[in-house]
Length: 334
Image (cartoon, rainbow, N blue to C red):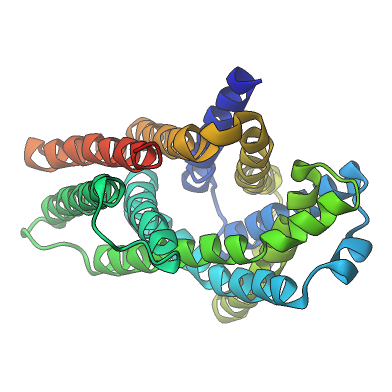
C-alpha cells in the first residue's frame, strides 16, 4: 500500500512537472487561447468528470457541510485563480524550467511556514529549527535560480541588461508562488467538507474530490474572465477556428489533463501513505516536479547557448531546493 502511494505521489510530480511543456510547443495560438482551454480542462472538466465518475452526491455533501468550510473553499479558490494567471504569464516569459523552479520554491517555503504560524508554532525547538533551515534553503535556492535567469537573459539581451519582459516574468513568478500558499490555506480550511463526505460513507479520496471541484471551479472564474478580456483586446478569438487547430487544441487539453490529473493522483496517494503522507508524499511530488520541469526546459532548448556563469547557479539552485524539500519533510519527524 505504501509503495503504491509513493509511486502515485511520484507520478503526480511527473504530471505537475510536465504540464507546462506543451505550452512552448503550440503554434499559432496566443497565450490567452492556450490558457483558456487549459483552465476549462483542468479546473472544470477534470474535477467534474472525477466527481461524477466516483458517484459523489455533491449537492448532499455541500448541503450538510459547515458553511464556513464551503465559503473558504470558494473564496480561497477564487483568490488562487489570480495566482494561476500569474503563473501562466511567468511560463510565457521565463520558460518552463525557471518559472516552475521559482514558483515551486517560493510556494514550498510559504507552505512550510504558514501552517506553523497558524498553529502558533513559532517557538524555538528542534522541529522548528529544522523547518526554518529548510525555508532558508528554499529562499537560497530561489535566489540562485533568479540570478541564473537574470544572467541568461542579460546575455541574450546583448548589452548585459535583461529584457523588460523577463523582469515582469520574475514578478509574475513571485506573485504566483505567494498565491500558491493561499490555495493551501484554503484547502486546509475546507477539510471539514471531506469529513462530512466521509460521514456520509464516502472514502477520503472521494470526499476530497469535492473540495477540488469547489476550489478549482471558483479559481477558474478570474482565469476565464482574464482570457476573455485578452481575446477581445488582441482579437484572438478567431484563432480557435484556424484551419490547423488540431495540434493547439490537443496540446492545450493535454496541459489541463496533466495538471488536473496531478491533483487527483496526489489525493489518491495520501491515504495510502498514512502518517508518512506529509513526510514523504508531498516533498517527493515537489522534488520530482522540479526535476521534470528542469529536464523539459533543457529539452526545449531554454538554456541552449547559456554561459556557464548562468547555468551553474541554476544547477546549484535546483540542488539546494531539493535539499530544502528534504529538510522540511524531515522536520515533521523530529
